[in-house]
Length: 494
Image 1: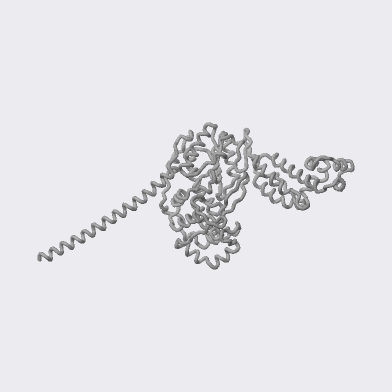
Image 2 (image 1 turned 90 degrees about the vertical axis):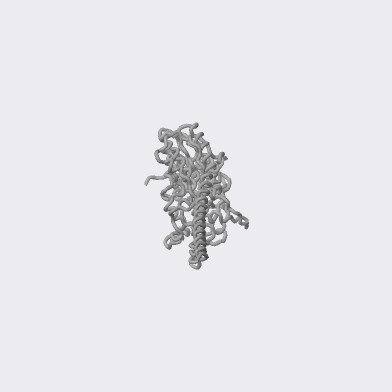
C-alpha cells in the first residue's frame, strides 16, 4: 500500500510539473512576442524621431498635434485591402485596360503591351495562384535615362509590362483607401487634382499677405526613399502580409543596366504605376508636420512651397524643415535649388507670379526659354520642308503647351509668343526663297507692289530683321498662317 501510494504521489508530481512547465513556456512566449513588438516600435520611433519645436509662430489648431505626431507602427494594420481584392476579376480587368491605354516601353523581358494580353490568357491562373500564396516575385526594372528640362538626366526604372499590370491592380485598391486621408495641400498624382490647382492655391496664399516663399527641392527624392520607413507607413494601412511582401518586392526587385542586375536598397523606381502613390504616402508625413505647425503650404509630388510673411521667418522654417526631412524621413534637401525668396523670383510648376494688389500668374522665364528652344528646333529648315510641313509638325506641340501654360493671367505673354512664332516662320520662308529674283517674284505674287518688293528683295539685312518688314507682313499675313493650321497660343473664352 505504501509503494502504490508513493507511485500515485510521484505521478501527481510529474503532472503538476508538466502543467507548471507549460504555463511557464506560455508566459515566456508571450513575453518574447511583446518584446519583439516593442522592439519594432522603438526602432521605428527612433527612425522617425520628432523634430524640434518652435518653427512656426502661428497658433496650432486644437487636436491636430496628437494626430500628426502619432508614431508609425511596423506591424500590419488591422484592416486594409487583401490580396483577394487585388486579384478580383473586375479589378484586374480595369488594370489591364489602364495599362493598355498608357502603353509604354517594354521592361527587362522585352514583352510589349500587346504581348501582355496573350500572356495573361495562357498564364493568368498560375500568376493569380502565386499572388494568393505569396510566392510571386517581381522582375528587375530596366534603367532608362531621359534629359531633364533644366539640364542633367533623370533615371527611370521601367518595370516589365506584367509587373506594371500587377502594380496597377494594387494601385487601384490602395489609392481608393489612402487618397482621402492625404492632406488637402497635396496636389501631385492624385485623382481630381492638378498642377493648375496647386498654382492657384499658392496664388491665394500670396494674396493673403504671405509674401515670402520657402521653396524646397528634394535631392533625387524618388531614388532615395528609405525602404524601411516606407514599408512601416504601408504596414500601418495594410494588414495582408502577402501584399506587404509584394510591395517590398517591387521596391527591391533590382535594376537592369548594361546587361547587369544591380540591387536597389532605397528609392521607388520612377516608371511604375505604384511609385507616385508610395511617394505621396512618405511625404504625407511632412504634410502632417507642416499642418501641425500651422504653416500655409502647397506640395506637388516632391516640390513643396511654404508661404510665410518675412524672410526671417522663412529662414527659420527652412532650417527646421530641412532638419525634419533629414532626421525623420532620411531625405536630403537640394540646397542649390532650394531658397527663401519672394515668389516673383521663384518658379512653381512652370509658373511665377506678378506681384501687385492682386497677384497674377505668369509663365516662369525658364519655361519661356525652353519653349523657344523647342520651337527653334521644330522650325529649322530640314531638307527643303515647306511651311505647311513645318507647321504640321509644330502644331501638336503648340496645342499641348497652350493647354498647360494658357493658365497664365498675362495675355501679353502669349500674344508676344504668337508674334515671335510668326516672325520666325516668315524668316524661314525668306531663307527658302534664297535668291533676290526669287524673293522679288514671291513678294509680287503675294500682292506686294513693285517698289516695295524691289527694295525688300535687294536689302542686305538678314532674314530675322526682314521678317518684320511691311512687305513680308503683306506677303504672309496672319491669316495665311491660320489657313495653314498654325494654332494661336491665346486662349479664347468659350
